Amino acid sequence: MKSLLLLITLLSHHCLAAMVTVDGVDFTSLSAARTAIKDGSRIYLQKGVYAVGAYIKASDIELIGEEGVVFDNAIADDKAALVFTGNNITVESIECRNIAVKDKNGACIRFEGQHLTVRNLYAHDSQAGILTNRDAGNITIEYSKFERLGGKGKGVGYAHAVYAFADELRIYRSEILSMRGSGSGIKSRSKKPSYWSRDLQQLMVMIVD
Image: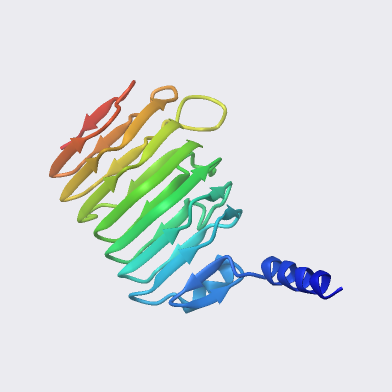
């Protein structure tokens, strides 16, 4: 009986475990954690499927996912799964799928600040991967994978794996495996683009002055 009670207690605790930790404080969702996120916060996401996106205004943010964090059909501000408007943002270990919005520019990450680092992102079966605003500073993408993005028809638009306006765009050891229809793998309006990629199958790079 004691063993059964202990098992029930452990299971109950597991079911109530927080999915999001901000600066050491646990929350049951990204929505619940929103007001706790401030400049310099570290956000940790536990493994799971997130159906709601996040709009984060703060700067100097680290958003780190446990292996198995997936944003599925999760939209914030009618733009992306994750929308950042602050500066100096790092995102690690996130998967995005089925991200779509009405203007056909639904992205995994929409970056509207300056200086972004992305590591171990897997963006697929969505309208776009990463989109930035103008004057996005330095953009670094490492160990990431993009496939089956954009395309013509079925409401997915003419999108891109990466569309960046940056002082410097660095893509290192990443894969862009396939783009639907006429979407570009990389569309860059960056002053200094640099690419060291593992696999550029069917990749179209568009450099725009």
